[in-house]
Length: 142
Image: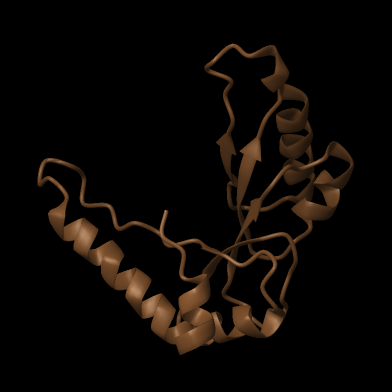
């Protein structure tokens, strides 16, 4: 994974976003032609960054952010919740405006709670969810 953190501090968020997007497009151009022509989505993980930096990235066209706080001044943001979600925080998360994706659900109990809470919200949109699967069989990861 390539990080633009130090570059954005030195040259600005706009420059860093352009650089990352150029690298993504270069990778797309090298993609084998037999793969589906699906445009990748850049999720700007903004955890630990100040709100003004997120707003600056938004001003440069970035709309998809991985975060665990909300900025109401950016109405077109598509929020990806990243990190561990505790069951007691599900209802609070489901109330977030523009929640686009939950990364990740790691248990059936959590999946059931998320599903129930999303249905109660009555949204016409489906919530996109990534599921974490323990493929190694390690008991510590259950």
